Length: 469
Image (cartoon, rainbow, N blue to C red; front, top):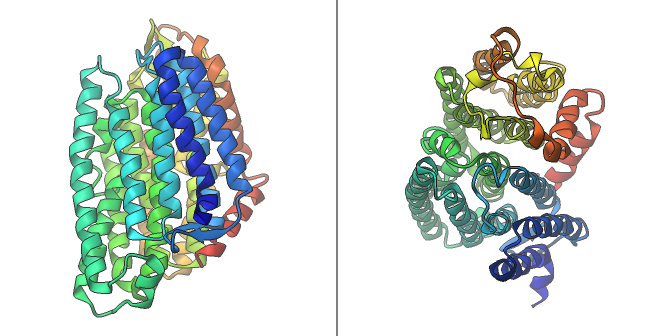
């Protein structure tokens, strides 16, 4: 019973989701339920910030600096997704009260993931997150693309869960434990079965972060799902899965890091290079952002591969900057529509600067940031990652990252070229931007001014890694 104190934020969210689920059946007031969900997530942030650091449930669930920072980051992504939903639910025909409830359940799963210090707790968190995401992907029942996205995501997700469980069984069989710390104590560096288990668990986790070669679901799901849901996929789940990956590898298998480092090395290079080339041929904006997210995960994995304090710090800096950039991008995608339909193709942006000069300038700067052009926030995210790789004597990985970044700049700059130099189309209806100002302008400004005062993000990352190093 004493352990319940340390899962108070998760318990609070679970009670809120259950109450909202029952309340929604009677009220049918989607806006009110969404506002209550946003308020509940904000309260959860306060609970997390005031939570004592301790392990619970026989050290299976850990509350520490690392989990605190990642949980708050995840909650920011979830709140941003709910704000996007409010602004577009009518236009996208997803006027369904279950949406905020599913977001909350998925968020609970992600919060469990980043605090999990046991293979079983890890699996429970992953599945709670995943089951909610499967339903969210297919939430628009009037869209064939959305239904297709949900089915593909579910089938491939079930496969990844099978791989994960198979790997967990091997690790338990050859170490005799499921707790990360006990696995580290009882590890046999020469155990081939343990290495096989790590490989299968990493395969399952690579699916969750959409890293190559387990990325195949990402473009179709991003395109088929309604844009607020696509935004949620791009924000919180990636951060939660990366946090779980770090705790799993660093806490359990730090002694044999040479064995798993090679796997992360390969996945990182494959993700960066495939995304850089595959995105060039894309004409759909959401598919483009899918490949962009795959590439960004590749850069983030460099920080994991380094297996140093500097690498871990650069990873957290990168994830926080990644969150801000994606909030800005998806708020932008939902801020413009034409003839009651949201644009999805890159060509729809033609000549946009003539009718919307300020908005065009901001999205151009966001694209520059995603491409890693100085002095914007995206540049510093990559800079810290590459410096960590060089200091870890992984020069080849840093060179591949720079090359992939240069190639990927092409498709980001192509969007800027289309907005400024192509012939304009019919003017956009910008009415929906009013409800997205809370996301779009603050995130854009943070991206632009990051270089002036980067200390808060750096200090937060330094604070977070205390419990991992």
